[in-house]
Image (cartoon, rainbow, N blue to C red):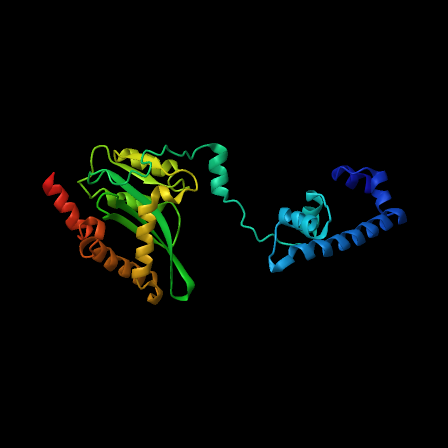
Length: 281
């Protein structure tokens, strides 16, 4: 029976019997004691300054603060063994897969911060922001903004950050017939906008696509500015349900587009400013 089990587990018989010798048992006990000592040292670094850390931060803390040098693999082994959980967020598996398969592709920056080009319906800015309402609940808002008039042309509110939020925003954009033939949509390099689904729909709608440089929020500053004003001027914290959030956003979008004058739009609201530009053209 022992021979059969050793064969199944790919373990030699001598190794099996050696495991139960007094010498091996003592070696394991010594190793366990050593691991316990290292575990306490790692925990000291893990809680240093009241900030939990991952393996690399622990290694650097031990070296910089305590003058101790430990192999990174050893630190990770001890953390895994004693279930010392790293609080650092893990890499998004969807992003990792997209990078590995190269299905998601970034586009060139056609805009280069040239937001005002004197043409209605040419430069379209898009982004997503999170919204917090009563009880710490969270929703997400996706918008498309005309950079020339600051008008919000389309938006979608969702409790989820899945692809539907940006696809539905694009579907709503279709109702606007004043977009130019060379109109393009500009975004950051978020996973939604590098998605083949999104890019396929953009192309199908006859739009070009442009993206900000990685990690550069200034490349889409007018959109970020809108979100800032939006959060300052809405009463989302009083909303108890997602439906209430949607109603408040709908009221605000009507106010913003049709009634909220803007200093740099000749003190006109976006829709009236667009109508004025179209009359001149």
